[in-house]
Image 1 (cartoon, rainbow, N blue to C red):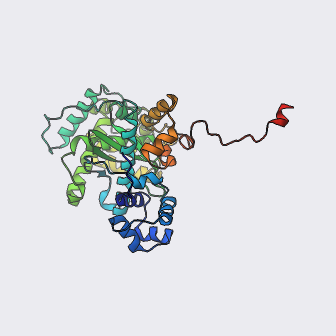
Image 2 (cartoon, rainbow, N blue to C red):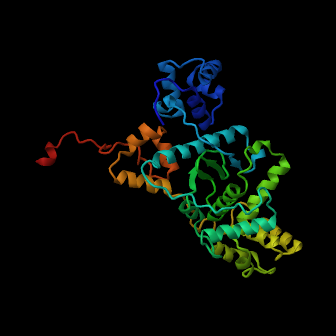
Image 3 (cartoon, rainbow, N blue to C red):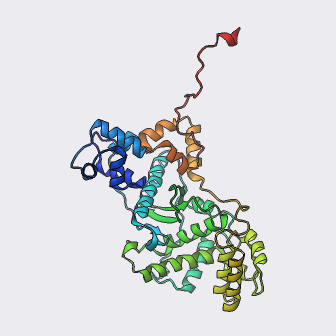
Amino acid sequence: MTMQTQFNPKRLSSARIARGYTIKELSERIGVSKQAISQFELGQAIPKAETMMLIINTLDFPKGYFFEAEEEQYVGNTFFRASTSIPKRVREMQKERAGWVSKVYSVLNQYVEFPSLNLPDLSDFPEGEWDSDRIEELAITMRNHWELGDKPINNLVNVLESNGIIVASVELGDVKVDAFCQPRSGRSFVILGEDKKSAARRHFDAAHELGHLLMHLDIHNQDSLTKEEFKIMENQAHQFASAFLLPEDAFSSMVTSETTLDGYTELKKYWRVSIGAMIHRAKDLGILSASRYTSLQKQISMRKMRHKEPLDDVLPVPYPTLFKKAFEAILQSGIDGFELVQKHVRLNPKDVEALCELNPGTLSLRRGDSIIKLRYLGNLQN
């Protein structure tokens, strides 16, 4: 993106929303009126230098961010989980953070070659028609296209990245974030929340978002859906995730109607899928009767396994690596990471480090800078 000499009012609104502030909250923090903030965001007034510094320090963005021209790009629907229960403020906050992912990608893409987007031709699937049989067929098509066979997927995040889908983890402070996805100008982005420290849940989240990217790109505005339509869409993505992670024939050969919770725990080691999701899949495949399914659900509640299951703190949680590897390659080539972020990414280096799974401080200092400065060598030399 290019710098401009004039203040960009859209950038103030973007930064405020990304930090989760209302206009009133920002006005109180920097000591100006709500009307003044509104005028700044509408382009009806320009902040004075002193006010601009307060905005920069409060929102924790570099100055260049607020003087950056906008780049037009196609942004498809953002598929939020439990959209009807997520406050609009949080959804908008998530969208802005998703924009950070796209921004980092567009800069890194100028220096490194990312894997090409590798999705199958789905023209043979009738648009919008996703019953259970079609979803099972789609799951098989995806596994065949990516040559996964019918074996467990040990690291779905890595599989998505290897096939050109940009994956990132986004931290929203105290706000709990389910995964969400968003198509942007020739790329597909999957954003994972940082609050779920479970490999099985992260795998299911990633597969769920893949389902949206394959089945629901014809939905251009999720907010226009009725509650029933939204529920149908979410159930379709859930069904795809189950079918994709637990192929019917392979999974069915390992499960019976008598499989116990301890048995499902052993299967979790193999399939890297939650016990709850496997039980639900067994019911959908007709392996479990309604009464047996209900009995297992009661046992799950009695053993307090709804929010944390066995092995959740044992199986390694997969994290995105593409951005981290890209930055490491760039830094090893001699390019100054601090300067790259300041001049081109124009986000807080700490935010970029968190987004790209980099160690804190990686982008915060110029090459050659040192926290330790030697004042006098005389005593050391004697």
